[in-house]
Image 1 (cartoon, rainbow, N blue to C red):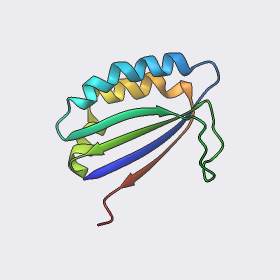
Image 2 (cartoon, one colour):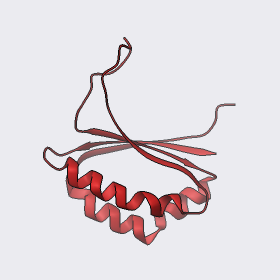
Image 3 (cartoon, helix red, strand yellow):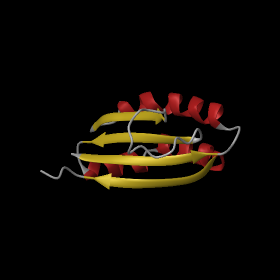
Amino acid sequence: MISLVVTMVIKEGRMDEFLAECKKIRPKVLAEKGCFAYDYFKEVQSPLGSQEPVQKNRITLLERWESMEALQEHSDAPHMKEFLSKVKEWRESVTSRVLEPAF
C-alpha cells in the first residue's frame, strides 16, 4: 500500500475554479486500477494545541494506491497530464510525501 500526502497552496482568488477541476478529475482517478482513495481537504480550526495555523488557501490531497506501479500508471494517465496542465498556474506551491506502512 502506498499513500501520498500532497499539499498545495492555491493563488488568491483561484480556489473556486481549482476545486471545480478537482471535482471533475476525482471520479476518473477513483476509477483507475489500484486507486483506493483520492480525497481533497481544506483546513478548519480545532481545539488541538498541536495544530498548525490554518491557511485558507492550502488544500491537502490524500491518496492511497495498491502499489508503486499503480501510482506510476496514475501519474502517466492522459487525464492527469491534462488536469495538471490546467491547474498549474493556479497553484503557488506543491509538496508531496510518498509513504508506505511502517508496520
